[in-house]
Image (cartoon, rainbow, N blue to C red):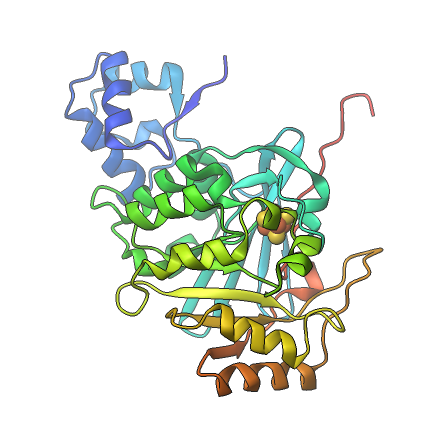
Length: 343
Ligand code: SF4
């Protein structure tokens, strides 16, 4: 029988585990401390528990840490790590060192349902939601784990399509019994699934990034089918009701494609769309996919687009591209399909 993973469990869930294993309720706190503060790699390390208690726990449970199966290193220091995923498809996390910051971009799903035209993950279809243990494992099991300063939910999958697991992972990262991080060190990126976005905003204080990519509804729908269900105008309307000037930050992501969304008419429309919202716009270079028809805009065009937004009073920056040589940049994460037995 496969053992259940303790990693990613909250004290409430650990109390149920303790009861099931005949341990006193206070053992839940001891287990949580060993898991998240001491980063125990095995139940044997939980020496506060009696030997018998550890045996009872280990009969059905394990810590659940599992190291990356493979790594790829970029010339710029970015490292892409491959992890066990779901439904025959592995997932990737990307470690991005940048001076005093060390960010991990984590995946929340194997594949994705959203089908964005420009995204390698979207091309795979959906293979399953990751559990909180799978998400926390990406953070805990990389060699650079202890030096991480930031987590971004921008890897494979739409985080708001697996919101419960993402919220539990955020709780582990921010709760006093967990890592005790400030929510300001965490960003969740989304296409803007409306009800779930509201829940994320109401239940956490993490930073939010929204993939806009086109200010005109018909053009966005061509790139992102979700526009037909959750129009970006409604997403922006929802965001207007929240304060992004003080405790948390709102970033709008905008990949700039040559001849598609890169002229000043688009910049003007984007500025109109976000008027009065405290946000900054991240302009992103695109990395063409195999057989893809989309091309990145020129540097000159991107600079003109940025300057036009700035002239409207919208803070806009061009995001530095990282890990392109190892297919770790925006839209390039593909995971790996597992070989079927007998193949
Ligand atoms: S861009 Fe994000 S939401 Fe769209 S298909 Fe890719 S992973 Fe899914």
